[in-house]
Structure formats: structure tokens, C-alpha cells
Image 1 (spheres, rainbow, N blue to C red):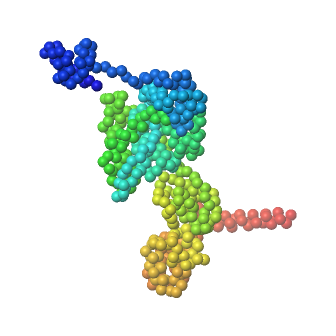
Image 2: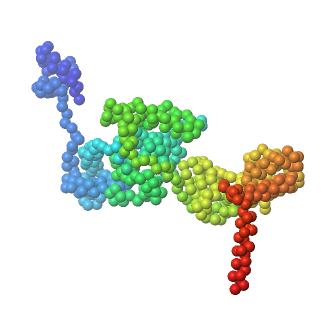
Image 3: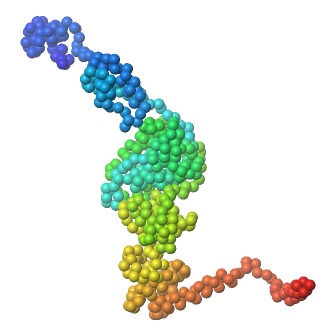
Length: 507
């Protein structure tokens, strides 16, 4: 290949210094034909013929067949599209005698021409104020409580003003999606008429023809609560929500670089919200350059659907309480009261907690655990079982590290000197379900002050308390008491009434 510097030297040696073909060829170590070609063409740059559009004559009569099969495969999913090797084997069985290289080259050129024609061209999108928002997820790395951790970040962006919010979660399950919408619409002060999504499995159960989708019922309930219509993009057409796609990079470079260090996700979300507001205040709107994103958002605010309050963002799993009084979710076990063992219960999974209900009655609640194979106890769920299994107070896993008020803890310590100290203390614990923890704690304090630390004494203090409560309930006070003595009414009218009733019965 001749470079332009070589061509320039040949031309100068001939036209300026007057050297002949042979001399130039000897000095530059070129062939005489090459020197002649350069000087006779009169060109200062050597042109080369491109080989991108080869004819592949060996394919011959099979061009149309290959074109039809490749066009048909375009409408199939990637996993069902035939490779060049597969097409070569098919054509061989139909009489093709050429080489595999010819088929491979034809297929490669066909696909390049098709991709070059359409896939890199996009249609610019425009949205009215309050018309739509876009939703997507990204994966980020942070240092969480000193440990390098990967988290999921929900991105919700208003299409008109470009105002957005980022919310961090441990994963991207349905309850996280619903909670992110609650957070975003509260932050924006309202919702749009449409929400644009990709075909995430947490929301879309089945992709039907065109834009039709079968959505998760809880996701549809959430959309109905906030009064917006969900719209799913065409599969593999991320440009339909290109704003939020590009925002993923914006958020990563602006809010997660360098490495963010936080103690928990709540602290991170407070930081992200403040960062989103600061970004909107200082960033010019891409269309209205003289206005910031925040200024355009304030104009859009009047077009949003007013915020209707948070949706009860949980998904439901149906379980039966195990003999150990557990319900299972995501490999973790959560305790329920022992009297619900064997009963079918409803486990409501929120973004940050687990709630258990039986026939619409809430029976248990725990902070959600994102570890694996963990057991989360509430010791009070197992207290009723201690009446028949008192040994559980000493070695039962739920009672390891059982935190009690200081007075009750002191009573337990003093009762431990008795041979049946555990049984005595269990009698006191059983009273909590009837009287409440504060009342039992007060009785224990009184017993300690009086110096009679005994279960019988403490139960004796609780009994009068019940009678006092009943007395307070029965002795109701009138807001407007009568000004006259009601006994005058009894003396004047009651005898006549009684005499009339006696006469009626006699008749």
C-alpha cells in the first residue's frame, strides 16, 4: 500500500529534480511499474476498491432462498434465528455444492445492510405537561455499613420537565416497584396520565399482540389508585423510554461517583432526594435553555393529577403457620402467635416489613430481613405456650436475649432463687396479654418497693386494678347532669304506672 508521502516524493523527484523512472525506482526501492503508475495517473492519493459489497458468485441460484429465510428469521426471537452454519447445512441437503465461507459472507453482508438501514435511526419524542412519566431500574455499587454492596435504584422521571427521583432498594421486586411510585408521586406532588415501562416481569405477566399486556393484579391496583394508565414499550425498543435510559448514566456519574458510603438505605435515600433537587435547580432544561429543570417542573405541577396518598404497597403470599409457629418467605422464617399454628394466613410483603394477617386481622409484624435462612422472632408470640412448656423459657430460641422492662427483669432475677422460679415468672408473663405490659410493669415496681417480690403478691396487685377499670367503665358521668331531683318523678308517676300495669295483667 502506497502512502501519500511516497507518492509526493516520486512526484517531486520527477517533476522538480528531473530524475527518470529507473533512478527514482532505485532510490526509493520501488518497482519501475509502480513509479510509472504514479506519474501517469497524475493523482496525489491512491484509491482502493472497497470489498464491502461482494457479489459471492458461488451462492448463485440460492440467493433468493437465503434472502427469504433470513427475512423470515427477523420476526423470530433471537434464540430461534438460524445461524449461517445452520443455513449452510440446509442448503447442502437441497443440492448446494459451494463452500461455507460463501454462505457465511452472504449472511453477514445481508445482516449488516439491514441493520445499517434502520436500527441506528430514532424518532424524537415529545410530551405534553403532565402527560407521562418513565420508570426504570439500575444497579449500583455502594459501601453499606462498611461492606461493598450492590443495590437496585428505581428511576422515575417526568417526561415534560425532566424532573426525576431516585430511590434505592435491596432488590427490584413488585413491592419495591409500588413503594417507589408512592415515594415519587409524594415527591412530585402528583402523578401523570400515563406511565411508560419496559416489560419487567414484576409488572407484566404476559406480552400479547401489539401493546396489549397482561399485568400483575396488584400492579393494576396501584395504577388504579394513582389514576394513571400503564404503557409497556415494544420488546427490545428501549428508545421508547430513552429519557430514563439516559438518566441511568446521569444518576450514576453524578450521584454514585466516587463510591458512596452510608450506614443504611434510608440515609442514602435522603441523600438522593436532596441531590435530585439540587441537580434540578442547577441544570438547564434541554429544550428551554433559559429555564432550569426545576422551573419547568413548577410549570408542569398544575397539570399533574393531585397526589391521592400512598397505595398500600404490598404483595400477598398465602402460607400455613408451621408447628414452630413460623411463616416462610424468601428462605426466611417469621414468627406468628402460637394459637395460629396450622391455620392458613396471609403474608403481606412490604418493601421494609412483613405483616401477617388471619381473616383480615393483623396478627404479626416484623422488619423485613434481606438475608437468607434467617429466623425472626417475637418472643411474645410464644409466651402462651410457656404455660404448658415452661422449660422453653430457659432454652427456647425466641427467649434468648428476651428484652423486658427493668422492673420485670429484676423480678425474674429474684424469682430465680426459687426452685420453681421459672413457673412463677411465667405466671406473671401470662398476665401481659390480659392487662398490658405497662400495667404488669407497674405491679412489679410496686412489689419491689414494698419488698414482697413474689408472683402471688404481684398477681394480687393486678386484681384490684381490674376492679378499678371496671368501676371506671360502669360509673359513667353525664356531660349535662339533670338540675331537678329525679326522685320526685319516681314518687309522682311510678306508682300510677305500676298500678296500670297490674290492672292490665289482671284483665
